[in-house]
Image 1: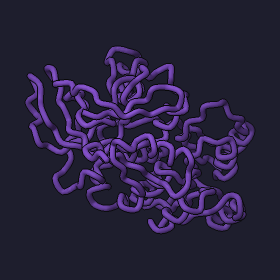
Image 2 (image 1 turned 90 degrees about the vertical axis):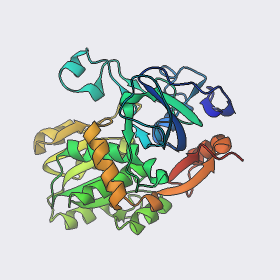
Image 3 (image 1 turned 135 degrees about the horizontal axis):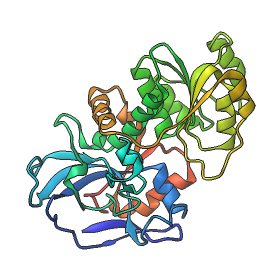
Image 4 (image 1 turned 30 degrees about the horizontal axis):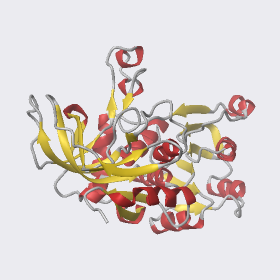
Length: 341
């Protein structure tokens, strides 16, 4: 079978590798689609070389069908459409014992810390497999994982109907957060510098502002009657983004840090004191976030068709990574793992 591997030095290589048959309590999945996400780009840039066992197949946003089951797997059958919640926790560390298994001190994030989905057949523990409804197209099922990230972020914010929320950064996760926030009847504005990303958000009915051209503080003041936003989601991972998020919050507003800030950032701590602000981290998801994400995709509350801008065959995975790295008219790129050019 073919597999896309990160080989270090900002390189993706597609090569033939033997399929791994499922052992006891494992299943083998015929992978339909695997998405490329921001974390995969961090891997490509070498930011996670301390975690990835080079060369390694990467990818964790996926959908497919069960192709084979190992011994002692009784609740999954061949042909079932599935996705994977790519988290394996130890169950014995302080985080796990406190009920926060998704933040396990020894977490195996499958696709980063172990072999991922960007291959034709992928063998994983049965415990991480999540069945998909038959009426959800597999191409949309590949968006369950990033949608679950957005669901978890909105829940961490405690966002309520009628509250005003700012989302800073209009990539796939930022747009998904805006859509999930809208699904709980919050009022949302998205800040994004890229006109193509703003256009996609606009088509999805999300109000957008351009921080390089618009008077963002003035627009937010008018929108909130000078109060500021109840919640700001910082998704860009930039220093300017974190500064803007803090400045735009209302008294007792909540800052939710979603983007990966690979370098320490300065934050106006005095403003946190003066306005009694709250800062919340948001990382990955729970199983019920996955179930909600599936329902949002199945019902059309998340506009998967607009978010998926490119689908490429597995053999073109390296070119797909290059396209994302360069930017341009790209939002969510999926790898069709069964199609080869």
